[in-house]
Length: 595
Image 1: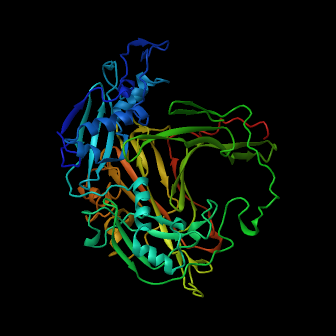
Image 2 (image 1 turned 180 degrees about the horizontal axis):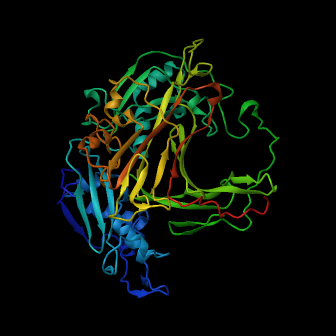
Image 3 (image 1 turned 120 degrees about the vertical axis):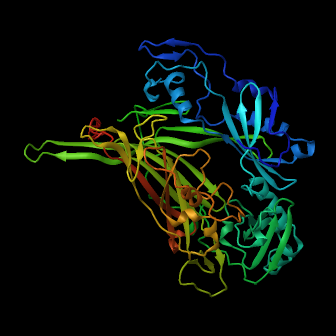
C-alpha cells in the first residue's frame, strides 16, 4: 500500500517483536499434510483461525500494541485513539484454499481447475488487521495495516487526502455531554426553562455533515441535541419525551470546548406526557395487559444447523425463543483496550408458514411442507433508535436481507397549543418526516470459483456454467423497499451521498471499495466520493467479479401510534435463484410430524 501522511508518525514499516504475551496465540504452529480416506490431501492440524474469522481479542491487542509502538514519541503514542480494528479480508483464493485443505469439511472442488496437480502450501498467509487511528493531539486520522505473523509489521496505508474525520466514540459522547452541562451559558438557558439540576439533562452528540466552511474538517465537531428528564432521574423515565428546543450549540470534540452557543428561541419544555413511558408497570394506566397466554417455541430434536467456530452448516429439514446459538464479539475501545460484548449475533431457525403445497383433485392426495428459514441477526442501538439487521436463508435457495426499525423517534418541542399537520405525535411534541437509507454491498460469485469470475448482469449469471436446459446459472435481485431522497438536486447532503441518486449500482470488484459514500463522510467537503466516482472509471462488467450495491430505504411519516416506542417497521429485498438449480431445491424436504 502507498505510504501516507498520518497521525502516528514513525517509519512506513515498523517491526515489533514480543509486543505483548498474547502474540504467541496468533501464530499457528507448523502443519503437515496427509491423504484422507477420500484421497483428499488435507492438513493434519487445521490452522487456528479461518481467514474470514473476526479478529480475536489477542489479535486486536497485538495490532494495537504494534501500531502504538510505531509512534515516534511518547506524546504521539499517548494521543492515539483507536476508532476501529477489524480483519482485513484476504484474497478469495486464500479463502478457497483454506476451505479446500485446512478447514473441514475440506472441499478441494472450491479451487479453480488446473491441468496439473495443485501445489498445496503447508500454511496459509498471515492474517492482517486494518486499524483506523485518530490522533487527539493533531486531529489527524490515519489507516494502518498490521500483518499478524511472528514479526508484527505495521504499515501506514491509504492515500493522503487532507483532513479526515473518523467516527466519534462513546468516550467522546460522554465527554461532550459533560462539556455541555458545565458550560455556564447553557446552565443559565436551562434555568430559564425551569431546570436547575443538570443530572436531569441528556445530551446526544450528533456528528456533523458539511454545509459551509464552518464544518470544515480542520476541527472535530459535534452538534448535540438536548433532552431533559422530569423531576426523577429514574432509569425507567423516558427522557426523550422532553426535547429542549431553541438552543444551538457546537462542540469541539478534540479539545472539549464549546465553540458556538446561542439561545435562539425560548420554547417551554413539554409537560410530562402520561403516555411517555414504556417499561413494565410504567405504560398507560400503570398496569400491563394480562390477557396474553404463554407462547413456547420448542425444537425437541434440536436445531438443524451445526456450528464449528464461525462455520455454519444448515440441513434442510422459531423465533429466538427456540434453540439459539449466540456469537460474542471483540471490539477495541477508544484507548486501544479490548472489550468483549456477549451474545452480539443470534443464529436460529424460524417456522415460516407453507413451503409448498399441492393436492391432486382426482385422487385427493395432498402434499404440503412447512417452510423454515435460518436467520442470522444483530441489533444496533444508536442513541434513541434501534436497527435490527437480519439475513434469512430459505430452503428453496432464496436469501433475504431485512432491516427492522424501532426505538424512539427523534423529537422536537412545540409552543403550547401549536399543532402541525404532519408529525404531531403528542401534545407539544412533533417528529419530523424523515427517511432512512441502507446500502447492501454484495460481492457476487454465482456458481464460480476464485479467478473464474464469469458473472454478468442484469440478473447475475455465470456465462460459463449452464443448467440442464442449457441456460446460464444465476441469481436475480428482487427489489423490496426502494425509495428516492425527498430532496432537491442541490441539497447539500447529496454532495456526500451521491449513491442515493440510483437504487442499483454495479461495479467490478476492487478490494478497497467498501463504502458507497466514501469511508469518512463526516464533515467531508469533497463531492461524490464513493460510488458516484467509481462508476466513472467505466470498468467492464462482462465476465468479471461483480459487486452489486442495492440502495433501499423507507420514508417515515410519524403517527400517534409511533409513540412512545415505534412498532417495528420492516424493509427488505431478496436474492432469488434463477436457473441455478435443475428443480426446486425444496422438493425433498420431508413432511413434518404434525402435517
